[in-house]
Image (tube, rainbow, N blue to C red; front, side, top):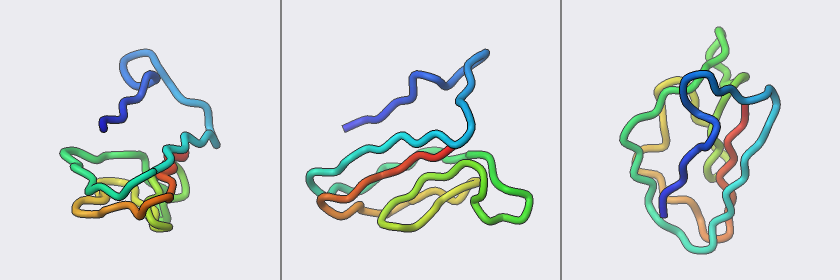
Length: 78
C-alpha cells in the first residue's frame, strides 16, 4: 500500500491543525525513504507530525523500521 498527499507541492499548502487518519487493517512495516516535516523550535513535535503506535515523529526522525499494529491508526497532523 502506498499513501500519497494530494496537497503537497509548489503552491499547495495545508491548513493548520488538520488531521489525516489512515486506518490499518493488518500490520505491515513502513518503508520510509525520506522524512522531513516542520518541527517546533523546542523539538517537541508541536507543529507537524506523524503519529504511529502512539509515538510522534517529526523533523527528520521518521518511523524507520516501525510496524504499525493491526487495527491502529497512522495520523498526519499539521
